[in-house]
Length: 116
Image 1 (cartoon, one colour):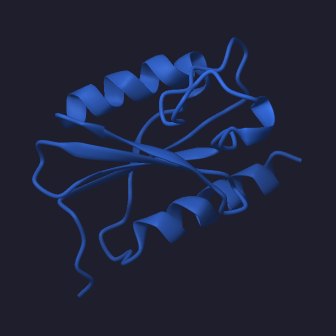
Image 2 (spheres, rainbow, N blue to C red):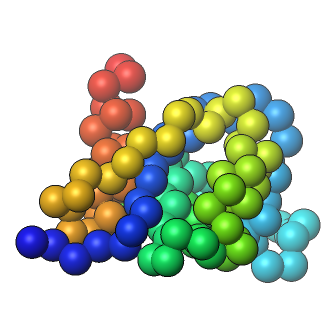
């Protein structure tokens, strides 16, 4: 049986239609060439079902930053505000998945390839 956090959720990020709201890049605004990549998927992890971390990845495994939130609800609200209508519905990471980060990247990669 794989150990995992109590709450692990992923959501795909579709095309951004407005201005990029960057909260996970220090010293923003900054040179666009120095910014973290735009995420294709976000992973919300909470070990205690109270505070939460949101991790951002591209479909190619590039790290797009992370943020700490005081609650799962705050994490969802902040992520919704960051990505607006581009954020697709949250889905649970299957319980048998050991590495939620690798799963999120693979999930995004597989779904993006299906869009062709």
